[in-house]
Image: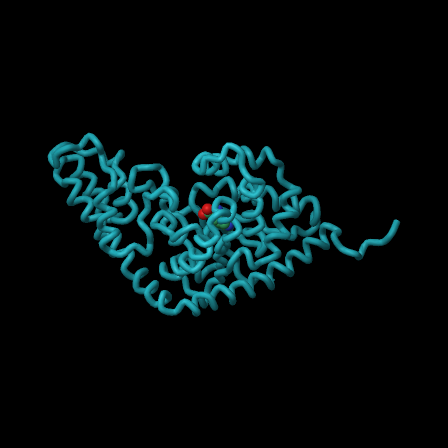
Length: 337
Ligand code: TRP
């Protein structure tokens, strides 16, 4: 039996994680790791749905993304980090759930739609269209109660809740076998990219990575898009259209009101404002860099953390999958009529 409530969340290993991931989800993971039994999935199968032609990028990113999670302060003695492809129960649940989801539901999923547009798919693979079903399996194989994610993941959590309800209603109506998970959105649901794009993205070239060295963070902060109508320092600024102002709101919280007021009054120039941002970011990232350096020198330890996580996830997943098969009458126990 579960003693503590569970968290399940995950990352696609298609590159390193950035500060958008941190404010959207990772900060919540760290904050809640004592309160919840937390599962962090490295979603390598889901990464295949868009990066099936780049298996070496996925395999390099598995350890990087694991180190991203460890570097922000997740304690490997508290959380379970595991690799999706090593958990057969997740693949089984994906197939079961695929019967409980219609193609039109998937076609109309707003996140699937915008990602399909981003990747330029006019037609798309069965696996890509169906990845939210597989994500429902990720979340429910351990009966997670809470899923800390960014706002873009909301349609997937809604779908998972729907699937879980259908499964319970149909196959275990007396005593629900599966848990309907709640979503938990981070402080700042969607961080814009350095270029002003609505989303900071691994594949959009507009991200500050958790593993970027201080000089890179500084250069990137200096290159961020600001209010285009502001030419001279004395011109009144419009923080509501400035990416740097948005970042200050998240990363320089206490001074935000002051910075914005001085920008509007033309008292602080964009260069000074960006320098301040680069300081805030580097202050946040400094302890992350320190922890990361340790793990980079102990990669075998990182692999062992994942292996231990896989063992625990498999014990839980296999037990649940067997019970699901019984509920679905996928057993030899039935009699001949
Ligand atoms: N789709 C998520 C993303 O792109 C990653 C993910 C995979 C995930 N499985 C999950 C998130 C389960 C939460 C729960 O960031």
